[in-house]
Each structure stands twice: as C-alpha cells, then as structure tokens.
Amino acid sequence: MRPLTFITFEKRLEPGRGARLAVTLASLFLALVLSGLVILAVGVNPVEAYTALFSGAFGTLYGLSETLVKTTPLILTGLAVALCLKMRLWNIGAEGQFVIGFLASVLIALALPGRPWYLLLPLMAAAALVGGGLWAGAAGLLKARLGVSEIITTLLMNWVAILFSQYFAYGPLKGLDGFPYSPAFCPGACLPSIGWGRVNAGLFLALAAAVVLHLVLKHTLWGFEVRVIGDSPKAARAAGMKIEKKIVLVLALAGGLAGLGGFVEVSGIEQRLSPHTAIGYGYTAILIAWLARSHPLLVILVAFLFGGLYTGGEMIQVGMGVPVAVIRILQGAILFFLLAGDFLMNFRVRFGKKVSSER
Image (cartoon, rainbow, N blue to C red; front, side, top):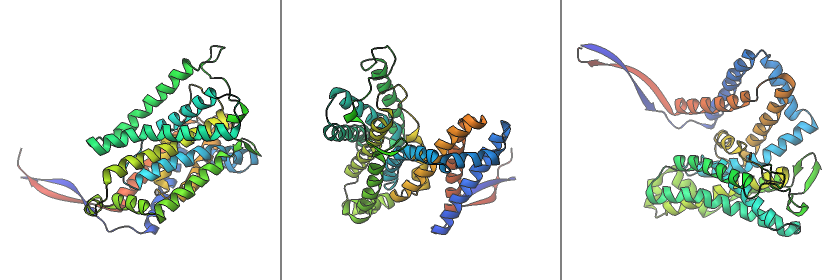
C-alpha cells in the first residue's frame, strides 16, 4: 500500500473589506512586478518605464485629457459588466455590444445627414442603446429559456458583431475613394467638445449613467431583486421573483450601456465608421468591473486608472520603444492575480494523504 498526497479546498468564513482591499492591492503589485520583468527583457528600465507611463497619463494637461477620452467608453462598458456581476452573470460580450452601438450610431448619422444636433444625437444614442440591448438580450434569452451559458454566447457574439461592422466598412458604407471608411459625420452628429483637448460631452453621459445605475441598484425594488438573485437564486425563486425575466432584462440593459459606449466613441472621437471599431474596451471592462467589485461608482475610478494605462502605454511605446503589448500583459496579470487571490481568500487549501492500492 502506498500513501498518495491529495488536495482539498475548505470554505473560509466571509472575508472582510480589509482583506479584499489587501488582496486587490497585492494583485496590482504582483502584476506590476510581472510586467516589469517583461519590460526589463526588452532592454528598458521598468522603474523609468512606469514613471513615464504614469507621468504621461496623469502628469500633463494633454495626457490627462487623453486619459479622460479613454475613460468615457470604459465607464460605460465597465458598467455593462458590473451590472451583470451583481446577478452573478458573466457578460464577456461588452466588446461586441460596444461595436453594435457604434455601428447603429453610424447608420443613423449617415441616414439623416445635415439634421440638427438636438434631433441626431438623441436618435443616435437611442439606436446604440437599443442595438446593444438587443444584441445582449439575445444571449439573455438563450440563458433564461435554454440554460445556454452566457459566457459562451456573449463571447462568440463579439466576433459576429466585429465582422458585421467590417462588412459595412468594406461594403455598403465604403467611401467613394475606395478605402474602408464611411463619409465623415455632419456637425449635428458630433458630440460637442468641452474645450479641453478631445474631451467631449460623452464624459458627462458616462458619469450620469454610473450615478443612475448606483441609485437604481441601491434604492429600488428592481435593484433589490437583482442583488437577491445574485446572492441566492434559490431564496429569490422561493420568494416568487421571476429570475428568467430578470436575466433577459439585466443582460439587455447591460448591452444598452455598452452600446452607449460605442455611441460616445463614434460621435465624440471617430466621427465615421472604420474597420477598426473593436478597440478592446469591452475586454478591459471585465477587469474594471472585477476591480470595482461591481460597484457602479467605483467603476468610474477604476476606468480612469485604466484609461491612464491606455494613454501612458501609447506614450512609452513611442518614447521608449516599449511594446504596447506590455499593457495587455499587465491587464491580464491583474486579472490572473485577482482571481487567484479571491480564490485563496475564499478557500483554504489543505494537503493530506490517503492509502492507495499497490501497483
């Protein structure tokens, strides 16, 4: 008989806020160390690179304005993921919902050229909201009716949305010069600038969305039901809550928020359709929502920090030759260490031995 080592996981007591904060900070530190090793491998001093990154993103008026430009859609896509996490749903499709909102806004802007802003902008925002909502709502319906994993459906629908957008860029909306760019928007289809770089009124829309979502989740019956379903589906079902309808509605609302992110990006920044509508904001939103612990107001802060990573990453790529892929590695490392830290915080790992039969 030969003893074999085996591993078991034992549930811990609910960790406090202090423990969660410590795990989050430790995860960020370890992610910085790992990314620093990658930066060192390409021949750049990691301390200098990180200093330049944060200085470029937050240390100048130009850098700060560009950080806010990137923060705006990140808030909205972050809210799209955070809302679903409140109900223990994983919305991996914020990227596709963002693209659909982007495309829907383009179609309205080009279909009604020369119209005034007070007509075009609300129509574009409504189209983005409905388009993103229907896109995510389809995944919610599959989850509610057939039990299909929303992780799989929302992820796969990202690629469908991207290819759908590229079809329009290379096909019906291609410019007269033959390049895959639609005609530029008329002035009425462009969000007004606030007079600071490229920062536009979309920032206020994103901030308002975060505040409204926070109030709805905290102070309404609907928000209470969403939280109860997330915490205990069995208790919610016993209380008579209609879980299936809530799944569809939550995913549809989340898709609408991500679609609004596409609206502010195209109306405020791009102002035309291109084949590069998928920027990666929807995937970064997963990190943002997780770091913010799905709290809408904390999403604002975390989105601002990740907006800085985008801006600073572009600057150190140009100024120091650091590949922009390092920022992707940093984002991935943050998620990896966060998940590992959360697991170890919730479960105690125990090693033991048991007797096995002889060979």
